Length: 130
Image 1 (cartoon, rainbow, N blue to C red):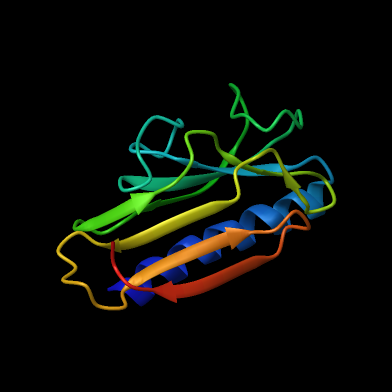
Image 2: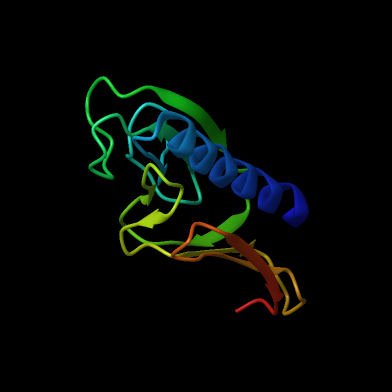
């Protein structure tokens, strides 16, 4: 379950970065409960959108590219602000890390930290549950 959830998050970030470069305008990833707005927590799910105006925020009319509802039973720590990529695929904004682990984790090494560098590269590291 942890590997599947981590892969969904990583794939969403990869899609956002790819779209940002393809369109040369930008893209973003935010916490979403509904898949149509940045309106939930990271444990609800995440949404990828094409940032057509390049402001790093979802605005009316910008297309949603993907929505992933995470499976129940995960604790996800992430920033309040969305993750954003500029037109060259670099991180735009201050959001740089997201961590997830099973809610019922008993101290095993099931925590995954997903870190986004300033150049837009992702790094996933394993750690003990908190």
